[in-house]
Length: 197
Image (cartoon, rainbow, N blue to C red):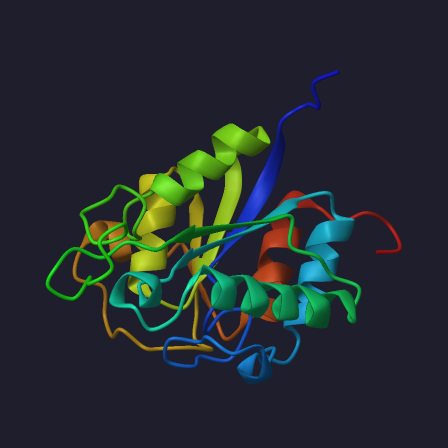
């Protein structure tokens, strides 16, 4: 039987869930941002899908490979599980056009590299997610733009990199929060939270 569609919170990874590390490729460098685990656990308890959507151009640049990425994601999931939280799915863009993109299978223009909304749209289609009433949280203006282009409510967190002021309407967040914990507080005030969660 088909499960009914549900709302989701789409999360950027680096600078939003875990500490920013340039081209993170080693599990031992994964460090959760304080409060991220309990925040994601609250989203899980509220029945919202939690989906990571992440640009990982290090794959196209040849800085790391699929195996390295899988190990980093497994470690992130392990650390979150230790705090009672889970990611329902990871969607990653490995692409980057030449000349920066050097690995042929990934070195091209795509529709999934944020700020394009391809990752969100693919996840919504494959996971039966509602875009209306769903959210995007990230530390970069491209995350905000990706969310807006997909019809999501976009929240900018200040726990990662600072891109400065928005330069277009689609880079303007609906809300700005210091970190993921505060963003989740704002989200749950709008969607409701189960009693006792």
